[in-house]
Length: 120
Length: 134
Image (cartoon, rainbow over all chains, first blue to last red; front, side, top):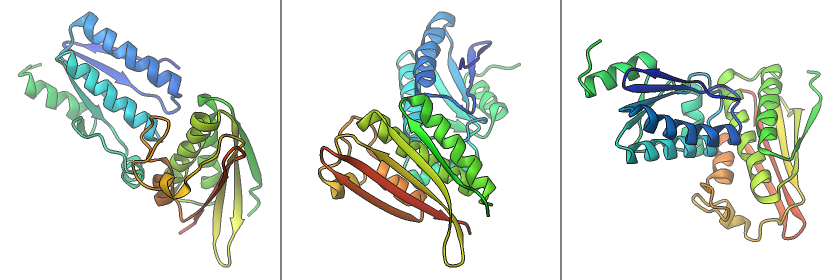
């Protein structure tokens, strides 16, 4: 399943689907980093609103995406972690340390616009 | 409540998604809250991942169960893989032999109410977990 990556000015927005396999996640990781390079993006928003399960592999992949993008000099913001998913992640002992998070896409964009002083 | 038994063969990472989706549907049918269904689906995802990572193939069995006064769900993950030599070590946070996070089993134990594991080196592993409806 392809994850759509949308270009929005200096940012990229990747919207996760509910049922991503490990292979999909790996593909997305490479795809996102390549797009960041191609468009010289300053930041990536990963929208996980639709994800109903965040297991150890998915959260590790998100951390790796954020680290790879940081090495490119850009920033990652994870948005839309559902309350139930957050609860399960905490129970499972999963963290997204060092990765910025925001409530939803709107908040994520506001955070990045403020950070990069972009006025729409 | 007439929710039977479902078996999902685990042979690839795609099957992990199938197993956790079926688990969520069954949990909802059994009357679990959406929050608990998420915990159950997450536990199934981790158990199925262990099968793919360590044994390559196996099976997840899902079953509605009746306790003395409760309704619950039973998830049994079984494989004929290499088995676990030191179960106590495998249940400790941070332990892993496959380069994964190593949070799988202790995490699953926290997500569910009952947790049982039996493993024989060279023969395979069976993990049986239950969650009871609140």
